[in-house]
Length: 181
Length: 398
Image (cartoon, rainbow over all chains, first blue to last red; front, side):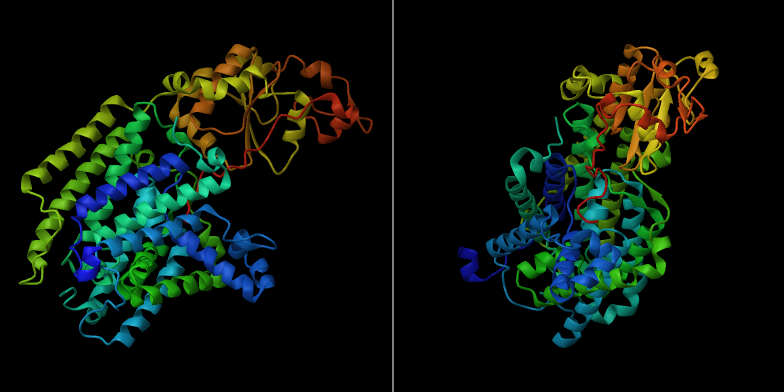
């Protein structure tokens, strides 16, 4: 609370320490629920729930949508959605506790706020598309699959890094001089 | 024994509450690592700040050691842990696309959520983007659905691919991660923006890094040394869980139910005939495989059975109950679902089906057609086969 009032963010935790905590959380997820962590599954459930508001018949004909929300099925009645709610709450609690709960836009210093938001949306679209293509996001596929030594997850993980490094040079203006805080 | 199915134990609402708690842990650890900040995530790709790599691989190694160590000492049944299905090439292509989205947008789905939770507007735009992207994917899928469903394996581990034991693989992966951490530290030193010192809230001395690394190596070698339990040891650990099904004879199916299943096109039936070579040659059911009881303990032999689709059923045939129940036990603890035993082996087969005709014609005794069932009263057998619909594969992300 003191930090929040002072509004001076605490430094982040040591990455290995944060990783070890994440590893223990991941292990408990497996031990208590059979499966690991993830976010993109719930995100596409939210998408299907929104699509249902607009057109139920459309949801019924698209294969991957129908699996989650055909007819009377409530796409949000799924454990992954509750995991997502928890992730959101956890992020908020930690940000508040560490004085990082602040309305702002993170961007490289060379671009405007509007440019940043456009690229964030674009990147999000590409990410959302790729996450369905790969059947999972970085947390679900790479992290959870990686921990149970799934071959596909390891191949996936390296291809995410390769994809990022391959394009990084061309979009360097977006991030040049990152994190000068 | 772990894993627990919280939804089965606590009911839907209690179970969902546990998911919320796990989510909170997930969100907190992502936030603590600084994953709510797109600049920090993007810096990974300019080699200035390797937090993503360090945190992710530490998490993977720690979780993997905990999982396989628990399995080695017998408190966790790894065969019940859901392993993300492998669709190798779609996964690689999707991963490349995601890498591009990552560097353009600055987040991945999980981290954008944490970013939104800490009120970052760029995170919100990214998150909206992922919802739209998931939509575009569903709309465009018909164009390449065959590719999307290609190169599939149900449960395929790094260790299967390498042909190593899980312990050896884990050990190698741990060493690899430590080498990568060392490389990451050196890279950061080299590329770090001048005049910008990375400060952590926990100053960790060089010596504690070495201790941490040593602890990981020692635990990984312990997993390797103890080894994953073989079926015999697993049965002694898990006897309580399954022996009830044998005692109540719930897994013994009547020959008529076998015929029904055999003729059901929606079921993938695997019949293992555990009798001797000579008996098998004299007479066996069509499609059955002659299997030596000791093969049940061979991992290579079991692999395809573990990977059977949800509607796969395995039926065992043996001369006597002791052979078939032993095989049943070992299959069960190795994670083969839907395993049944043909009641009394083939001893009743001839008396039941010999001399019977369907529409005036005789049929092959080794493959009675479905119509045979009509020659018997409806209550001639109690159906026992229940296809377990529990999805063991596919995590929360699919």
